[in-house]
Length: 283
Image 1 (spheres, rainbow, N blue to C red):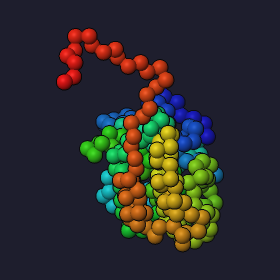
Image 2: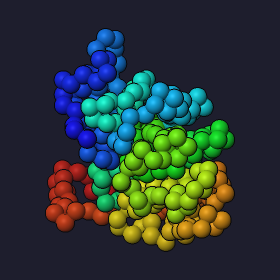
Image 3: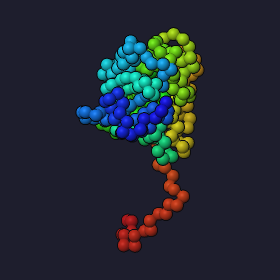
Image 4: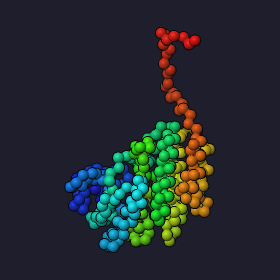
């Protein structure tokens, strides 16, 4: 797929502003409409042939289904199309003023994600998955890079990208739409089976995403508290996993509340301030 460059025009409507961090090279850009206001986030997927008009309609409907649930974690779809030059399906969502979950976690200090942030992210992601599953939607290829995070009223807010994409691919495009070649660690074993996409795949992914957050504590303070939960959530056999995101969250809440949060050790070059000679002695 040839990359889009700043200034390029897509579909006569969207001007490329700059590349955006994605989980595959040259697949994400910030864009702006030629007429109108508000930047967008463009995502492209390589195809082996051009979709028919009916297939493109199914693609648009499938990727808009999560938005119809009304859950805040699923951003609206502004536009969809097919770019023949790059042989790629594309989709534009509103621009997200934040970063991907891996980017955020990668910038943390050694004592890991703040526990209140961790709790809110777990709640938001589990509730988003339950909402989607109740509507008959399954992500199937959920991975940390498809979760975006930003500051919000609860300290942090998140959104989930590409809900409905894998269901569309399996139903209408398995022979001509290539799946992303990334994030294999987050994919449940049953994803390779034929038939309807089971919600158990998302429980597996949820377990691995929570593992990423919990493993940010590098000093060992959380070791031994959460590993058994992750092992169950991401068990190879679907029957051994939690039955739903709500059940997984219910089991996770007491674990998060019990996480110790000792003060981080002082750096090696720490030097305490000398005592103030004018200070009164303690009584």
